[in-house]
Length: 206
Image 1 (cartoon, one colour):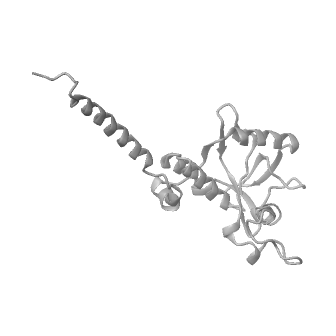
Image 2 (image 1 turned 45 degrees about the vertical axis):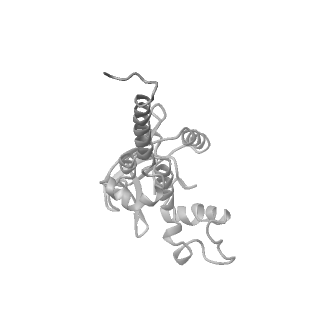
Image 3 (image 1 turned 135 degrees about the horizontal axis):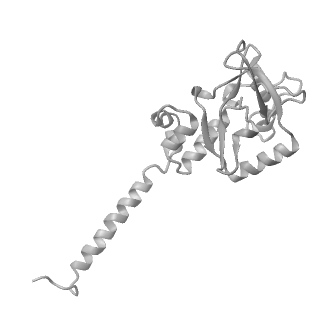
């Protein structure tokens, strides 16, 4: 579960730093490094920056202390942008159950929960529909828009662009089109020059 802090938002550079996340083992929450045990910095679109500003104004950050690295780790404090009504860190299961799952169900993206059924837990909350799907959505949008794989791999925390390609190559339908366009431009330009030299009206070398 992300655990963004106000200090992680760099409006001047238009980036968002990701130095930690919130993990859980048997319901015990703790702060940890992001996926792959790597901190990272990602681009922050202006629309996201504006939404974050509005969120901070409406819901002031809450300082939360949790163990670091493991449930038994040394306590560390971070000012969090997302917290429960009681001022606690948000567990991923809680987020999936009460915030994330109802949203795609309301939008008819996933089947609605049957009336009287248990909350979005267990079999009613398959991982394929979980909050983690936003990571894949972000990846597909970036790659379909032509973002370089090397840059995308750094944002996703992959150790190699090959890993990114292995997961998301099918989201790159236009791969190769830029190269084709460049070669067409080169050969077309040379062809035009050659045609000019072969014209009956062009000067002939003696």
